[in-house]
Image (cartoon, rainbow, N blue to C red):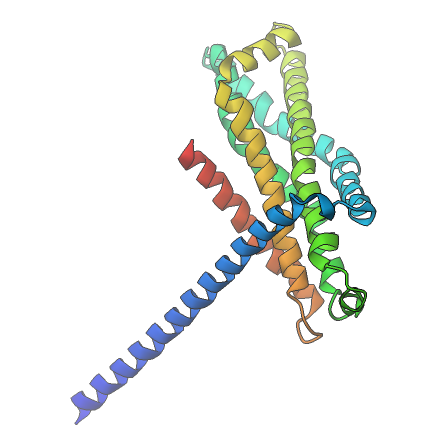
Length: 274
């Protein structure tokens, strides 16, 4: 009897564990499909000429200004820190081992291909994504989503489309500023410490020679897609808050986890394809 009871208990626990796993997989798959459909809908709606009326253009320019212009100081400051911590250290250790000819290749592989897109995604979320989460998190509970519906306005057109495209374009601008400030800071520190004797133009030529055609296409495209996905995650997470029982303070950590996961997945997917 004891053995039979133990066997029945183990089977019951196994069924509950498999049931929980199945529910988790179904929920995850459903959320993924909804997210993909939302992204496809945004692209389709954005391609229509009738979408870009004056209010949508105004919201797009406001979001783009917040990402590309107001975040300029943050991008420069991050570039200075990365240039000091990465580029100057790379030059130092390569000079110490007599491999200064590899400076361009190391910078291209570590900085341009990998680090800049990830940093841009995190900066966009921290600087602009959190504001989007909080703003759209009040859409249903604050009642202004209901006002849109009463007036016959499409929230997808007014809220999601301009933000996603502004984040995507702003990510490219932010990546350019971040990369230039990083390279300039790294060179100035390395030159000031006497690690390199060539001019900044020779340093820039060294980096460009290490780049291939792929490096002029894939990293910028990666930054654009990451900006688009971060905005999409923030919009979906914010609009997903339906009532007061879902506390507003939980949106930011939830959005951060989802955005970080999206950034890493996109970065890995581009690396695998490339």
